[in-house]
Length: 293
Image (cartoon, rainbow, N blue to C red; front, side):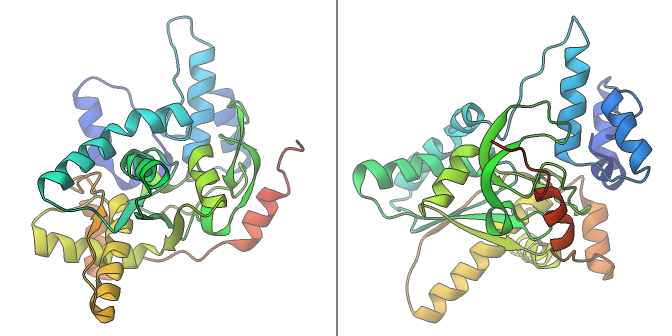
């Protein structure tokens, strides 16, 4: 479990332990790569990239374990499209078709799961769905990164893929949207962004939680920090439609509840939650280590 989330979201860990799991914070002292990272930066908050490296190493050194890479690889995106296929059916039942489709985006599988079936209608049927990917300002791979070949993990054990990346050595700040703390973006999502078929926006943590609180008070559902990014842009697009005097159907993916994220909401409501500015110097340093392909 990524160290930042291990510390910020203890109830997720406790639930897994209740079911019998052993949960280890990454970077951990249980793998060679984890020990290397801790030796260099003992207070490292971890990242999805580091956790992937440790998981791959752990699986590779055990005869009884297999590891399946997910989220960033294209086959996982396609598996997730059951979400968008169901959304198409549900929109038809409501007699509507979305003008704008919005999803939060970390590695890409959640976003692709919702939007790819609708993009297929754009390509095959001439539909005009506008698609917006929303990422955190602390890890803005699509809005600030470069489109090139890079590793999917910090230990450089995963395959090289062409994607939007901030550099596999980049460690994002410990925002509470742990599922979005990733240095890169799935190849298919990156290709769509590069060719102009989708838009990308980055959102700060405070603006996201503001939208999450507004949504909870209006709808009675507490969203996880990750989908609050999509909610923020959905609200912004609704306001823009109102100001333009236009009716627009907006679809977004509420991909998780925030019941185990109450400590983050507590900090937001107390005024102690903070934004993290884009760390240009650290990103530039990470990009300097990109593989030469």
